[in-house]
Amino acid sequence: ALRLLAPQDLVGLTVVVSAGGTREPIDPVRYLGNRSSGRQGAALAVEAATRGADVELVAANLAGEVLAEAGHPRIRIRPVATAAELATAMKEAADRADVVVMAAAVADYRPAQAAAHKLTKEDGILERIELVENEDVLAALGAARLAGGAPVGQIILGFAAETATDPEARRDRARRKRERKGADLLAVNLADAEHGFEKRENAVEVIGPDGAVVTVASGSKRAVAAALWDAVVALRG
Ligand code: CTP
Ligand code: CA
Image 1 (cartoon, rainbow, N blue to C red):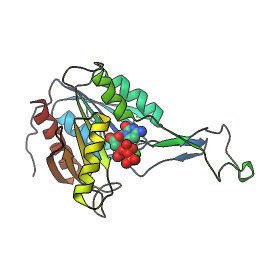
Image 2 (image 1 turned 180 degrees about the vertical axis):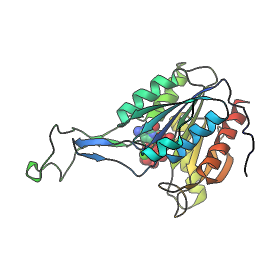
Image 3 (image 1 turned 90 degrees about the horizontal axis):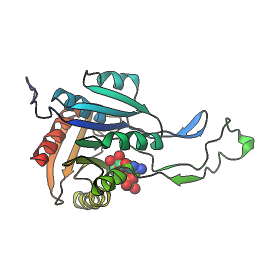
């Protein structure tokens, strides 16, 4: 539905949103990446700013066109490239954030070494790239909050792209993921042909603190963003 006036229910809040997909260097010209456009994260940032929040958008490799969508006087953009850079930026911002949103697709692994020069076939390395696991940023932010290293009442919203087709199996995976990472809310992307990565529309189901589905939303990424902020506001009480 078209809203003539956005609610001003986020005034006075500082929020940080990660968006996009990290790129893990193999050599100066190659990387391991993913297909996240960052549109859902950008929409979350714009919706929050429109509702009055001060927003830091940690932008992992967003295309110029997506960055342009995130232009707003209350949005500060912090560009990052790798999972390690994203982790540093998120930890700094989360220290003073009332709400943390981890919408970025963070690479689970990175090449153990990034070569200083462009690898050639003769180097024989490109056939088998050794990978090491990246830090789980969302879990680190959840643990930091548990240890008292976050503003009182901080809300953490994570995402999960689950591919299980059975809805109950998908929810169970999401429930375990939410608890493991210490997030309050976990938005499960229901990725299919019309929704999700590289698409303009999205559909999510949000798992809340007691494991119940607290929100179901679909439509434009902006409409989904509005529903997600409604869920955050409801939780803050
Ligand atoms: N995430 C993160 N750091 C990582 C990987 C994921 O912060 N190294 C965050 C994502 O931003 C997202 C949430 O964790 O908010 C869930 O990501 P997802 O890839 O679904 O979970 P994983 O724990 O990586 O599990 P899977 O093996 O299913 O990929
Ligand atoms: Ca993952």
